[in-house]
Image (tube, rainbow, N blue to C red):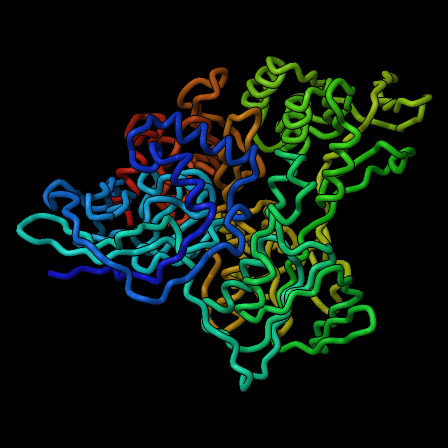
Length: 605
């Protein structure tokens, strides 16, 4: 009996080889979970993720030499099981490797073992059976388990798939002699006869994912990707975690010039958009007007300026671009005293990074504890204590009224009258959606573009929005409300969904918001959307940073934060998306538990 899963074109990547050498034990299931977490934090610190493999795929269209491997007994699998299996090399030259074996609705599927984002072991993730996806346990990227295509989140490369059969109760997988971790996604080629013009504005996560997805969805017309930055699209989240990577922006590139040329995606760098006229379907650049058939606004957001005197003084810095990161790195050398204004995610990531560089760091936050607006006081207190063990000083409930120059130093004058002297000030107090240039489209009070569930801008034909610039229908219960999420995972996914709908598909964006951060090597996941909560249920120990925290309102779990408890966050994300998340009452009574969530997902799909 031949089951689903077909061999695909082979691709070799330099990052694939690095991952193979560095994380072989983690990937073949012989290392403890701690190894995977260490590897993830090292990837963050090194900036090795999608950017590490940019443009390095090399396709081989000839049929590779194959071998048949007995990998398991069929009777050992229950529905929804994911297992990582080591493929041992042979004396006749076959290399070793690893696969993920999945058993879904009575059929076996075999794919590559690792996520193409940061090489997380996919078998430690979950199967979303209703969509036939496997979901990465670290960062919520998802791949079609039948084709290997990336379908959600931050993995841009596909994973290989392999032919599977069951013979005399044994699961037999056909694999090539040379196994690669990742393969190039299937892409259509430009057809000169297709005169349509699709414009993608923005070179961030949503923009590059949309350009990719247009070709993956069979679009053969002209694609223009326009970015105001002088760099090709790059892995922006790395900057706040590794300032040194900014000195080599090409190492952060998500796709290189050869990739865009191969797939005939025209990239205009350092191009400022003066106006998008939604009624006339035109994009106005300096000295050029482009007429489009469909357009995607994925221009993200810009750092919010502080409305105080002295904000523009030399030494007062904010982070968005590699050039910004270079300025921060140059100013914040070991031994320098740095004040970070802002105690949410970008501010605390920078505080972690600067302290690891050897700076004397003080954080000034309007909140009483870090992350209080999102994570609440209890978890914020635990994270404050953790930062203090690393030498970061935190002053909560503080507002800067003015920044002054005093000799070679800066002074932050606080509302309380206190004065904080430092060498540099780094500002991380939020962002503003970058959609001011869009005319003739509905906007939310914060200036973002209002979209429907298909990410189409409300009341406008053939205009879409994705990422930080989009306010879209709430996917977490309040269907009448709008939400705007400022994170890489959502932006990348929305870019893909918008591209599908630009080519005429009607696919509703239903993903549960997912966020992650890395703080002194500790990884925090947050899934859901919770504006306010009336109860916090904690499974685990907040002080030890080993927990699952349930944010509850009116007997409903609105969001979940986790540390050291993978893959709970991605399990919760799938249950929320399906409307199957247990109630607060069931969690309190013991009818439902953290330990049982994965089993519930298997039963619910």
